[in-house]
Length: 130
Image 1 (cartoon, rainbow, N blue to C red):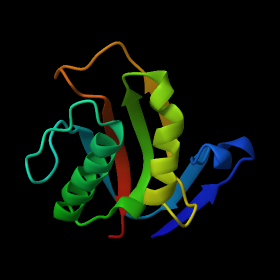
Image 2 (cartoon, rainbow, N blue to C red):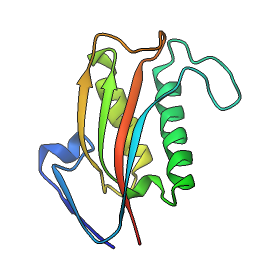
Image 3 (cartoon, one colour):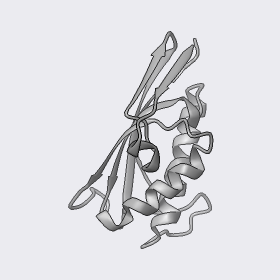
């Protein structure tokens, strides 16, 4: 499987690619993941960084069960409860994708989540080798 990242100019500063193409591979559609507790069961109330990192850990686990990894994500839709978390999310995404091969992405501020206390939810699509 081959992936091509089409880097823009300002998009790299925001840690996303305006487009990603793939040839071959198996597509995995991943439902939205949120996190109000960390892996040990500790509440993450009000902790945006903790929730964002736990969401990525949960996505990593889900993708692993389907034969993939975080670097296989080609697009993600990120929902945050407060626009002020946007820049912090971008910094965390840079850490998650340190090679600079960022998925295509949308970052959307919403009025609320189905579960009180959630600050972030991410859904994504990944393409893994056949």
